[in-house]
Each structure stands twice: as structure tokens, then as C-alpha cells.
Length: 394
Image (cartoon, rainbow, N blue to C red):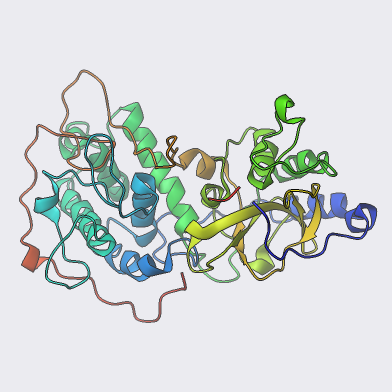
């Protein structure tokens, strides 16, 4: 999609390109070895959650020690892409993808209007956290990582986690736990504004691929196919650049936003993806992406009629950056032909298990649900001590 009010292209690629190879090499490896963010960090990174949901996810994600706001955000994104009207093919409903038979047991009035509505996003957020914490009580005596056990029970059922004394040996469940905890790092704020982020060792090669496409005419929907004469749009270029180093990114820009943690402007390193949005408080409005190369410039496939080129990143609609990681990219959900998120799958083996009782990817369940908490007894988590951080293009 067109990069709105993009900075003026470099007067000559040779001038702007001077020193980029050295800059890329230095920027890629100077910070290598720095620690990754923890998936359990309590604060949400600004701009990762739509502003209307930032405070509720921050609050309800702190309902019990076994969950966290980034983990809750990752679950909601995996289930629905933050779509409050999401409906799965098997009947799961709302942002948290509750089945109608499960909803009454965990329905929580998250917005204080006196009722709990599965289609209301604030109620869905509160109910998802309530459900997570109910599961946490059921598997509290199971050894190992408490959060991993909750996620495993969420996918495969408490019975399976208790039976196997931890995450059960189901490919789907192990993948679900791994993906949610990896994706939580994409939603987690750094421990401090100056906390370093690990730099991807694939950055230089991804940039090299993009540099070989400089001067190529832009094509809306372009993925570099022979039938497209090797042309790209913005997210097609970034997808192909990382595919060249073995990392599979989603097709559109606002899904690529979640492929890793989010460095601040002064933490940018060559190889980071940089993004633009029409609403800086809502990442669902992201419409453009480029590959940062250093010095305030990116490699950019800007719009129809232009060619792939170097452009400045500091423009009005710049929303932030993502440092792509293999785990982060692998954790991202897929979408169907209508653009709706495909919910995670549940174990499909022949051995009976106690499957999770909500979520589009874990339908049904023979096991009885834990005793439903009385809605009046579900207390809202305390308000945060300070103000919350401020919260599909091609």
C-alpha cells in the first residue's frame, strides 16, 4: 500500500548507500549476545494492543500469578486477531473464542454494565483471564512452569496436564505453549527504556536480499513471482527478504508487526522492520512496512509508479518497529481466505483427553468444567498504579 507522506527518496542511491554495508555489519553484531525479553514481563509494550484494550488486558492479565498481560494479549491475538466479532466454523464466539456452552461458566462483566456479553471485547478479555485463572487452580499442584501448564491445559485440558504431570506429549499442545510464550515477547515492554534487545543474526542477509531489488518497479500484491516479473509490494518484499534467510513471515504488514519484540526509535538496528499506521493507537491500522538499514533510512517498496528505493523513516504515520525472530515469526497465527485468524488446533490423537472447553482450536470436551465461579465473586483486578502506555496493509 502507498506509504502516506513518505520522506523524499534519496537523491542518489549511491550517496545514501555509502557506508550501509559497514553500518549493517556493525549494527547487526555490535549488540549480539544481549538477552531476550521475558514472556512473563508484566507490562505491555506500547502500540502492540489497540488502545481501547490496552488497559483492560493490562489489568485482567494480572488477575493471578500464573498469567501476565503479554500472555493474555498473545492468547487473544492467536484466537481472533483482537476481533470482537470473530466466529469460528464450529461456533466459537467473540474475541476470546468461547463456545456457547462454556461461556456461562466463566462469563465476567468486564465493563461494569451489569451483564456479560461474549461479543463485548471488554467482557471477553475479563472472561478469558477468569478462565485462565480457573485452569491455574486446577493444575496448581502440577510441577514445572506454572504458565506453561496453564497454557497446556487451555489447549488440551486439565486432565491431560495432570495425567502427564506437566505439558502432555501432544504436538499441538507443545506447539501451542511454545507459540503463546514466544508471541508474548512481542507484546512485552522492555524492562527499562534502555534495555537491549537481542539482534537477529539473519539481519544482514535479509538486507542484502532487499538491496538486490533496488530499482525494481512496485506492484500491488507483488511477491516477486516470475509471473509478476519479480516485482513486489511493501510486505511482499519484507516477506521475501526474510524467507531468503529461512524465516516465514505472514503476507500483510499488520501481521508482520507481531513477528518479534519492538525496539524503540533509538534502539533501531539494521534489519528491523519499520511500520506505518493511520491510527497510531491501533496496530490494526498498520498499512505499510519497510526494512531499516541504519541512519534513519529503510529499503522501501513505496507505491504504484515508484521503484524499490531508500527512504527516510521519520514521517507522521510511523508507529514503530519489530525485531524479527525465528520463534516470533513461527508463533504467528495464519488467516483464512476471508482474512479471519485460524484458531490454534487441539490434540487429535486417539487417546481420550480432557480438552479445553472454549477456543476455536479446542472444541468440545467430555470432561466436566471446574466449578464455575460466581460472577458476583469475580473481582476486577486492581487498577494500575500509573497510566497505561498508549496503545491490512501490503
